[in-house]
Amino acid sequence: MGRYKDAWRRSIEEPAGFWGEAAGAISWDREPTVVLDDSSAPFFRWFPDGQLNTCFNAVDRHVADGRGEQAALIYDSPVTGTTATYSFAELQDQVARAAGALRALGVERGDRVIIYMPMVPEAVVAMLACARIGAVHSVVFGGFAPHELALRIEDAKPKVVVSASCGIEAGRVILYKPLVDAAIEESAHKPQHCVVLQRPQAEAGLVTGRDVDWAAATSAATPVDCEPVHATDPLYILYTSGTTGRPKGVVRDNGGHAVALRWSMDQIYDTHPGEVFWAASDVGWVVGHSYIVYAPLLAGCTTVLYEGKPVGTPDAGAFWRVISQHRVKTLFTAPTGFRAIKRDDPKGALLAGYDMSNFRYLFLAGERLDPETYTWASQLLGVPVVDHWWQTETGWPIAANLMGMEPMPPKPGSATVPVPGYDVRILDVDGKEVPAGTEGAIMIRTPLPPGTLTTLWGRDDAFVASYMSEVPGYYLTGDGGHFDEDGYLFVMGRVDDVINVAGHRLSTGEMEEIIAGHPDVAECAVIGVFDDLKGQVPRGFAVLKAGVDRDPEIIAAELVERVRSQIGAVASLRRVDVVAALPKTRSGKILRKTMRAIADGVDEPIPSTIDDASVLEKLQPILRGS
Ligand code: COA
Ligand code: AMP
Image (tube, rainbow, N blue to C red; front, side, top):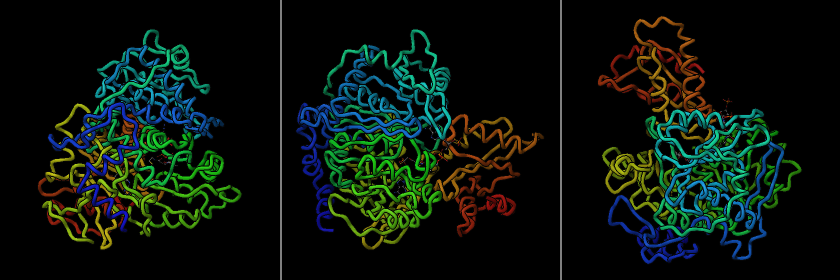
C-alpha cells in the first residue's frame, strides 16, 4: 500500500500542496494563489481566489486542444431505438446556443435554473449551458412527482425551468409537462419561463408568454462564450433526502469540484482522455452529475448517456450490448442493476457473442454491495469489480480501491480504503474513536476535500446542524460501519431515517409525514426492509384515529397511493399495514430499529426500555409476513 499510503498521508497533512498540485490539471482564468481557506470553519473554501469556467474545462478546452472531432457524448436510447454521437465541437456549439437561449430569457450569473428532464442529451446540454454563463442548475430526477418538484422550485427559486414533453419508462410514455405545470401551480415561487423540449413521442401544450420551445429557442439563439466565475461560486444545487420532508439542497462549488473530479478519473477510475466511460445512472442523481456529465468530460473522455434499464430494454443483455457497441472501458452503476441482470439471466448466457475486449472495470456504488452480487459479477466479467462508497454530499468517492493509483486485493463487503483527502474515523456514541473491528458511526475529520458540499442552499445553519455539530471537527456521514485490521472500511448502512431503494436515496421520515397527513391516521412508522432486488424497500405501519370505522384495507391503499402521488413511483412503497398500536419505549419513541430487525429476520435484543411488550408481540407476524 506504499503509494496509496503516501498519497493519503500527504493529502491529510499537507492538503494545500496535494490539492494545489491537482489543480494544475484544470485550466484557470485566474490561477488560485490560496488552496484552502479555513478561516470560517466549518465553512471551508477551496481555491478561494481562483477563477475558472467549468463548462470551458469540460468542453471548449478539448476543442482548443485538438479533440474537437472526438466523441464527447454517445446517446444510447433503447426505449426510443436511437443512438447518436456528439463530438466535442458539436457539444460546444449546442451548449453555446443553449446558453444564449437562457441568456435571452434573462438568466444571469448566479440565477437558478431547474432542469426536470429524462435521459436525453439536451439535459446534459442544459446543465453545461448553465455552467457556461455562471447560472446555478438544479436537476430534479424525472421520477419525482409534482409535489417534490414544487418543493425544489420553492427552495431554489429558479428564473427558468427546463423540461421535456415526456419521458419513457418501461414501455410507457410519461407526460412531463403536466407534472411541471402542477408543480408550478403548487409552488409559491413562479419561474418566469419554462423551456420545453418537444419529443416525438408526445407533444406538450405550451403556455403562451411563459413557455418556450427548446428547438426554436436554441436555433434562434446567439451562441455565448464561457464566463469566468469564482472557484467558490456555486455550480449546482442537488436536492437529496434527509430525515424530514424537506429535501436538503447540497451546494457544489466550481473550482474544488473540477479539481477533485478530474483527479478522480485518473487515480480512482483509471480512465483517460479518449477512453469511454459509462455511468448507468440518471442525471437526476449525484452519480449522474459527477460521472455521466462532469468528470468524464473534464477528463476528455467519451461519456455514454443511456436511456434504458439493465433489464427489459429489451433484455438482461442490454449492458453487454452497450459496452461492446461503444467500446466502454469503465462501467459505473448501482448493485441493484446487477441483481436485476442476475435475476433474469443467472448464468450470464446473454453475454455470449459480445466483444468485451475494451472493458476493464466495473465500479458499483449507491448502496451496500452484497458479497453474492460481487462474486457473480466478478466471475462473469473477469474484470475488477470495485465497490466504492460515497454520498450526494461528497460528490465523489470517500472510500474506494484506487485503480489508477494502486489497486489493492479486494475484500467482498468492503469499499476498500479512504480516498486521499478523506480522514475517515469510526466513533462511538461518546465521540471516541473505536478500535479496528468495532462498529460505530462513520465520521470524517474536517476539512473535507475539494468537491464536497460547501453548504445547504440558503441554510448555513442547517448545514452546521445536520453535518458538523454531532462531534465538532467531524462531518457526520449518517452511515455506520467499521475498519478491519488491514485498514479496509466496511460500510454497513445508514443509522438515520434515510434508505436506499434500488440505488435511489429516500427518506422514511418524509413518507411518515405524508402518511400522517391522512385524516384517518393517528400515528405511523415507515421502515426500510431488506429486498433481494432493490436492497431495501419501505414498509409502512399506521394506527388509525379512534372512531374511524372505514375499511382498513381501503385506507391502507389510500396511504400507498398518497406516497406514490406525492413523492413518485420511485418511492416503491407497496405495503402499508393498519395496526392496533406501534411498539414504543417508555418515553414514547417508536422502536423502528427493532421493527426493522424483526422484519429482516435479524437477531436483535428487544430494548429493556420497551413500554408494552405485548404490542410488539402482536406486531411480529405482520412484520415477518412478506
Ligand atoms: N421517471 C418516471 N418514473 C420512474 C423513473 C423516471 N425517471 N424511474 C423510475 N420510475 C418508476 C418506475 O417506472 C417504477 O414505476 P412502477 O412502480 O409504476 O413500476 C418505479 O418508479 C420504481 O422504479 P425502480 O425503483 O427503478 O424499479 P423498477 O422495478 O422499475 O426497476 C431496476 C428495477 C433495478 C431495474 C432499476 O431500479 C434500476 O435500473 N436501477 C439502477 C439504479 C440506478 O441507476 N441508481 C442510480 C445510482 S448509481
Ligand atoms: P446518495 O446520496 O444517493 O449517493 O446515497 C448515499 C448513501 O448510499 C450513503 O450514505 C450510503 O448509505 C449508501 N451507499 C453508497 N455507496 C455505498 C457503498 N459502496 N456501500 C454501502 N453503502 C453505500
